[in-house]
Amino acid sequence: MRIENYISDLLYRYECVTVPGFGSFLTQHRPAKVHYTTNAFYPPSKSVSFNEQLKSNDGLLTKHIAETQEIPYEDASKKIETAVLSWKKALEDEEVLEFKNIGELSLNQDKKIIFQPSYHTNYLTSSFGFSSFVSPSITREELKKEVEVLEEKAPIAFTPEKRKNRSYLKYAAIFLLALSAGTVGYRYVNTYTAQRAQVAQQEAQEQVEKDIQKATFFDTTPLEIPSITVKVEKEPLKYHIVGGAFRVEENADKKVRQLREKGYDAERIGKNKYGLHQVTYASFTTVPEALKSLRKIKRTESPEAWLLVDEID
Image (cartoon, rainbow, N blue to C red; front, side, top):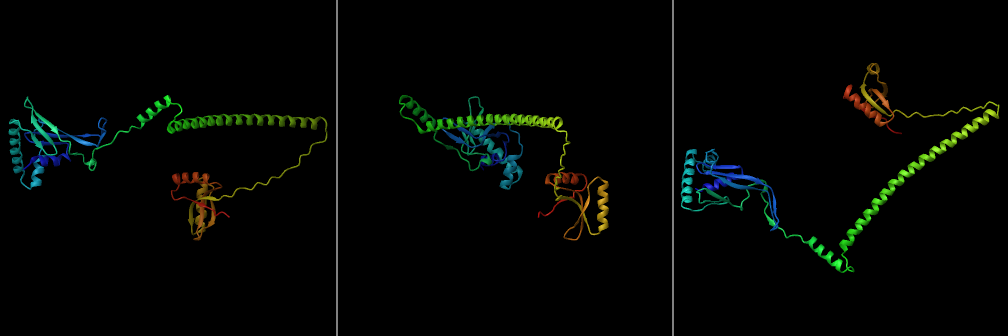
């Protein structure tokens, strides 16, 4: 039985897989990276390392093998012990242990285990489907610099891209200049208008004073000023905050009295299409006033209050 296959399965789900009596395989998240020399792009991954100091049995590998093989836990533990003995003997014989999709293990001169991870398998499940790729470098900027050098030597030739970029700067400068001029002009017009209004008001006041002086010193006849009647049409109250609708008229009147005692301009505004007498907290001419009052009433009086709008003729 190849224990390394079960280790590989667990590395997808766990950051540490311990082989009892041998060591632990550890994984660490690595972000995506770019190799600027080879122009290779690598997706996020898990790097695999080995620590021979972590040998205590945590039961993870043994339990996984027992459940997968459907054998007792003790039998799985014995299979791991057998595999570990064979691995240690191979390392002592200066052999290289190759674990598929994990890496290679060998001993150095100090009899310490050296681990060389495999880069063919990505144990980060969120990166499934992502693979590394190589993209050719972009030399557009380098070619542009070469053309600009040629332009300096031969001024007659020019590149459309360079001329086009300069036109952008020209239009941007014109736009900013126009915007600044528009702002200054707007301020000047406002200042000039205010000054002219003040002068006109002063001239009108002086003319009124002259007329008063003429009427006082040169005309002894009392000045009769005709009365002017201005008819102002009051805006209709079209927006009503309804506090209730009652089948019995006396109940509607009672509700009106209760609301008026609380300080509201309560009224009965007639029957609705169902024959119910509607009672309002107040009525308004504009929507903002009505909505402001409605929000306050819903918060402090009754969440069931609602806004009724009269039909526009």
